[in-house]
Image 1 (cartoon, rainbow, N blue to C red):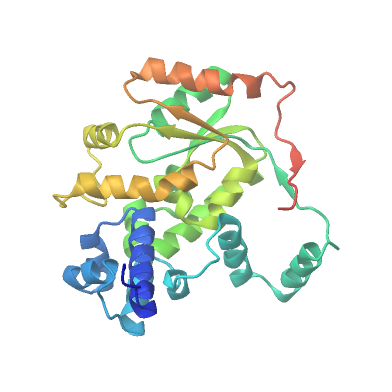
Image 2: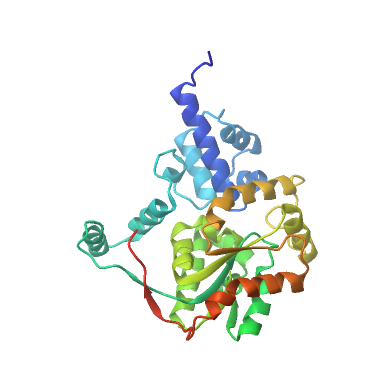
Length: 301
């Protein structure tokens, strides 16, 4: 007979899995997490393997280093994307908004309105979001926007400086604000998002509900090769296990990337071939005339 896992050990294993997953979603190496949290890399490894008898204080430091809430790490049954969005919205909601949400959930409220803002490209660094996004925007006559560049322009700081000064949580707040300002422009755009946008439920939900979202895919080796050519290895520049970290990040994000409206696999393609595949993917959308920035109803889940 297979021995039963004690509830405490099962809890620690699930806790370790959630820490690994959250770290991967945010694109942080174990070494980076250890440095930011002030906890040894060895201890982080024990925690992630389910062997760390973690104190609530150290767990709080780990969650803070990742810009998350400590309760996000506690294993629960409520881990669906919609629940994560609702939870984050509730954290910042006013009493009036909470009352309106209760009315909607009970069937007494109206469906929320949203906008169609264009095409958004998601995926890991090195997927070709900027390169292919620019080519697509030029071809169809829309404005191209790189969300990270927009964040830098609005705040007068580089992404690296923002994270150094305000942490992951501060950067995600600015990312959400920049996205809201883009939507306020009321023009059709091709948007290249940051690879980690899927780790923030509210922001990613806004992308999914406002844009025709496309996941640009490639093999892990191609992602890494393209990033190296760009001279951008953050946040794993000094990590000899960078390739394994990238695989872990991709594995953790795949279920979220897969929520996109469409997928374009660029593996083994040159730039022109990938651009054609992307254009062919959006052709049915562009054929729906007239295509303008218009409000659209989003059905309640």
